[in-house]
Length: 324
Image (tube, rainbow, N blue to C red):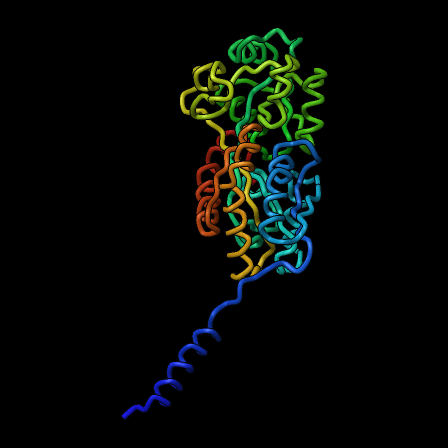
């Protein structure tokens, strides 16, 4: 027969066993670096800097945004891959660095295994814009000009494999035109060169072009999305403007960590990112720049990256933009 002492001892052992098995809640011990693979001023940089104050409040340590431009985001990604897996170095990856570059070039890293998914951050609105001194008032007239002068018109993007690059390459393919791609190291310098007329057009992030559209320094022709946006309701989609059914280009950012990141760290960072993306002030600041919060779990992000890779590999190969 069990005595009270036996019962107390067994109950205590059970409680102790559960406590021994429980994972302690991870907290950062120093500042956290979030690497951005572009120069300041672009959509990726803007997203990270808007999120940083809320993440800092939630995690209790300074958030340092560090720009590591180059290699279409690959330099920042590689630096994160090789960082200690302690949760203090992260990267704000893009569709270019996480999906498109591995399809378009022969990388030595596999972004789905060499980086650890934390969660998606935002979906990004892009807008096809031209300098105000160009004669084109709609996308169809731009396409007609490009068709009349093959390889004469140049479009800029924030880097190889970026949403803007993909938009231009797919427009070439679907509209039967030939233009010149001019990749930049981020959205800041790209916008300066569009405004000054050094390139003819771009499908650039709303975060970088909206103020210039409102000020008349750029003209919006279309949005490379599945539907019109409430931010520019009078601007048609590319599919509408150029009679190209099904034309839509994704653009999104996601937070990734080094490989072999322990589960308690992943869980805490993912929780903080999700909470930041639901904060009303943070959401409002993101939406003003055409950045729509789109949180996910780490598992959902990994699945999404694999689905995007499977979706875009045949399209890029058909368009001649794949190096694999």
